[in-house]
Image 1 (cartoon, rainbow, N blue to C red):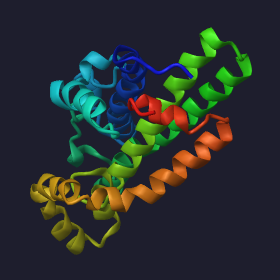
Image 2: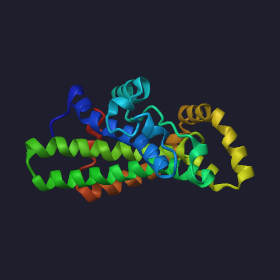
Image 3: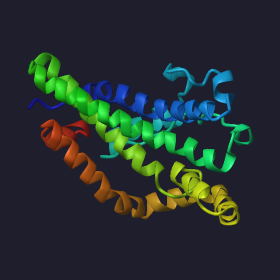
Image 4: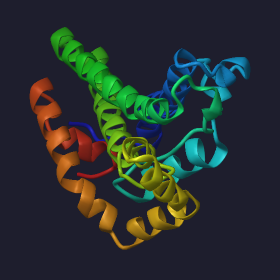
Length: 227
């Protein structure tokens, strides 16, 4: 199969990354609105326009550099504002709003799987090849974002879900870790602990997804400039 150029790889990744990152945040705001807080709605942050959610570092610079220099892509959008006190049942809804982000990524991964199946069904090199590459990128980035955000460290979604599930006293204590959350995450990445934690579930998710769609695993390597 013809190797992708650097420009081609960026073109393939841009839509899956933008959708994965921005719709993750929109999902938080949308569920918050359903549960009583319309802060994000009032500020126009429930828009599907990526420009309203782009963070120059997390949405553009970091994913681009990772794509060039590593075999890993990650990023973030501007967080959707949520006024937790306006939620109807703050303790319960705190967890539901947090869970909306990973749930959105899971949904998007499933939709990209359908795109891949459609591309293979069409069976036209001119149309199917870019669709398969883009679908593979979409499955990958959404699986990564879902798993990372489910790590139980505040302010990641997993940490907030756990805070919501714990008894009030322990939940409040656990939530205090949020001030150190970024430091903990950086240490996990620097020591390769995060890769060890997520490597197996990510491999399983990607393996089953690619097997179901019929996409050869080699396509994933090409997306990162491998052989």
